Length: 263
Image (cartoon, rainbow, N blue to C red; front, side, top):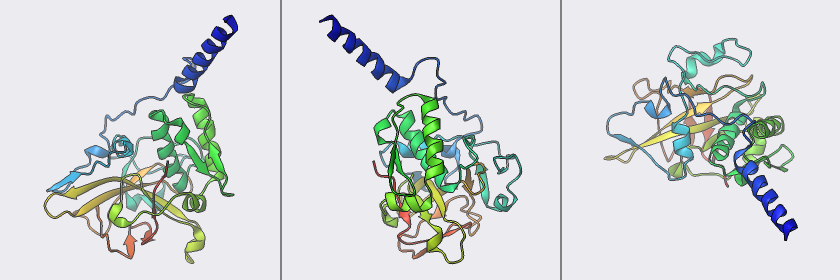
C-alpha cells in the first residue's frame, strides 16, 4: 500500500512537471504588445476579422509588432536590404537560432501555439527523410527550445509539403501556409514558405482579404509583407478564390500550394 502511494505521488509530480515545468526552468512569457499586435492592423471599411474557432488564429493576431521604424534585420544584426521593400511591419518575436528561416518560422509559430496552449502531444513535424519528430518535454521551455532547434536543422519546405495536406483557396484559414520547394521552380534555388497571419471578410460583398508573414534565408526578423500591387489595400491582399497564380510580391504561388498543419 505504501509503495502504491509513493508511485502515485511520483506519477502526480511527474505529470505536473510535464504540464507546467518546475519553477527553476524559464517559463514562457507573455508577448509585449506595447507597439500593438497583428490584430491592431487596421481593416478596410466594411470588413470584419474571421474567427475560425481553432485558437491558432487568435494566437497569430496576438503576435506583437515592433515599433514602426524597426526594419528587417538578419540574425547577425545587419539590415536585410533585399527584404526592406517588401516589409510592412516587423514582428517583435526574437529568433531562436541562426537557421530559423522561412519554413522554420512557420513551424515555430505552430509549435509555439501548441506549447502555450499545453497541447504537447500535437507537437510533431516531419524531417527531410519524412520521419516524424515528436516532442516529449512537456512544459519545460528549455526542452521545447532544444526540440524546435532540432526541427530547424531537420525540416524544410519539401518536408512541409510532404506532411501538410492541401487546402482549397476558398477554405483558407489563418495559420495556413503557402509553400513550394526548389524542385518545383526552375528559376529558384530555394523553396519558400509564407504563412497566412490574419483574414477578414466583407459583410456585404463576402469578399475576403488576408495578411501574410514570413521569415527568410539567411535567418531574419519575422515580418508582415506589404501588398506592393495595391498600396491602398496594403498590407492586406484580396483573396481570389479562383486564382491560378497568386502574386504575393516577394513570391508567387500556384493553386494547390496552400497547405495546413494537421493535428
